[in-house]
Length: 153
Image (cartoon, rainbow, N blue to C red; front, top):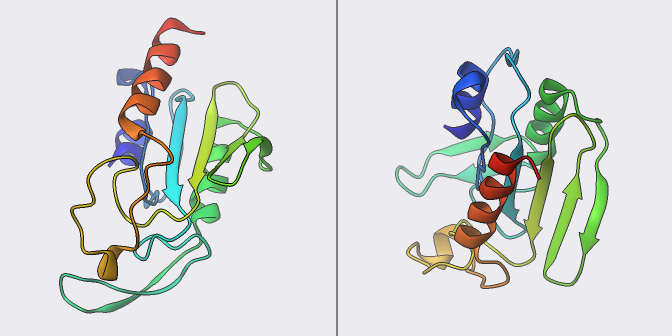
C-alpha cells in the first residue's frame, strides 16, 4: 500500500517506510521522488529475499513470489536513484543498503527476522511466518526516518 500511495500521490506524501512488502504497481512514474525506508527480514516465509514458491497461510494456495531486489531495483529507478546500492552498514544482525540519488532510499535487512513487525510482539505463528527478532525496533527507526525526511536533514 505504501508503494502504491507514493506512486499515485507522491505530491501528497513526505516519505514512505514499507515493511516486508512488494511494489505491485505496474508503470512507475512518480510526480516526484519520495524518500523511502524499506525493511525486510532474511527469514520471512511470505516475502522471501530470493523469491520462490510461498504457501499462503490463509488459503494454503501456492504462489510464486519475485525476489525482493526486483521491487528495490524498480523503486530505485522510479526515484531516480542508482540501480546498485552501496552498503552503508553491515553487522551480524542488520544490514543497511543505500541507493544513492536525489532522495534517501535505504533498504534494511534484518538477519533472522520472519514476517513480523521488527522489534514488536510476534503475533503470527513462527511456523507460518518465520521467527521474530528484536534486533531493530521498527517503530522508532521509521519515526526517526520520517522526522529526518520532514526536516530535510
